[in-house]
Image (cartoon, rainbow, N blue to C red; front, side):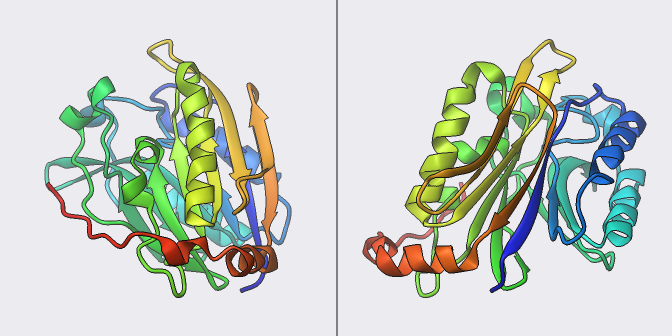
Length: 263
């Protein structure tokens, strides 16, 4: 493993306006310094957290996927964030992991946010997706998944299943204490880095978002945090520090083993 350079894009989103969001985000990505490996965008970065998938959904050959391919290739980065995807008469809140060569991975949000009716509009995913870059394993998840620690828990210990737990979100300001607390908890209990990227601004339903995007080290210490404004955070995840923490404090050796059974 070598150190991993990650950029967190904390941005406002124009409600249900794909072209404006892509233009605005591209302007921000153009400010990212060379040498960055991974750029992280919020949940539903092209539309905001909309329950109107019939109007907004794209296919895996749609304009936003093509935009991601172009940005990743031009900037020589991995680009990730979630958007609304339609396939076979189902809608998904799907995180895309776009490589510079145009290859991609995907993760469909497992825990749909029933409080906002997401479960009525979107089909939940059934499997985790752990990506690889520079020797790092990155567990990719979306917003409400954060509240369910079993879904994120390390399942193998020697070596641990992953090194970074990443969340993209549209997490409301009124419940931001839970967001900040659970990001720290996930880092501590899984002895990993945690990246959480949230939006700012009000959405089309008048719901305010404070951002509070964070990067947290395996000891639960915050290495980057910004709230209440658009911001670009550039952090370096230290491979040696991660290994030192896991070697000095081998707490995962005492973890419970378990199997996830889907309902």
